[in-house]
Length: 84
Image 1: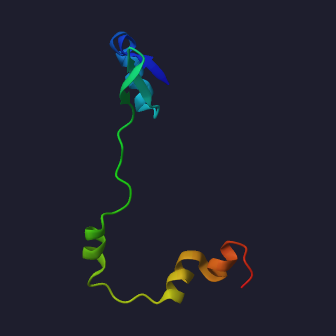
Image 2 (image 1 turned 90 degrees about the vertical axis):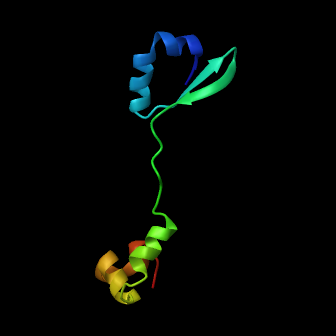
């Protein structure tokens, strides 16, 4: 959705409510995009440095046990319908 800058001034509360609900609103001045109002961006994933800290002293992982724990006795291939 795009709105002129005057709508931001006149309907600030309603536009903030829409942004809080997940909508992104482009703000235009003289027909030119000047800003985007939207929900806060959340970091995606875990930083590499943190993963290294968590796993550098971890015990080795047995792949078969790992996938049994993750997918059960059916295994990864069965979970995706592939023949194994």
